[in-house]
Length: 87
Image (cartoon, rainbow, N blue to C red; front, side, top):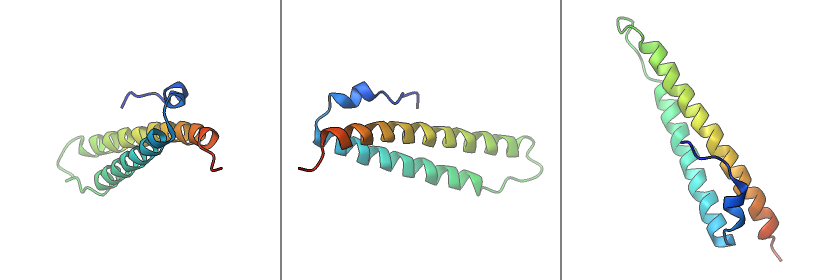
């Protein structure tokens, strides 16, 4: 997930599009967290050399993905709060 949290991208969106982006982003965060949890709870046999290292690398990658998605969501939420204030 190489997508950057670009506030300018969200500036051009309508309130409906921002709501959709925030919802989609929340789903992506949940899915990444589920994947990270499954990886973290996977039992790796002792005889599998490097298995634990691979497991940790995958979990760390999912953590990085979640952090990036949270930054994107924060950017979208900030723009939505400013542009779409309930009147």
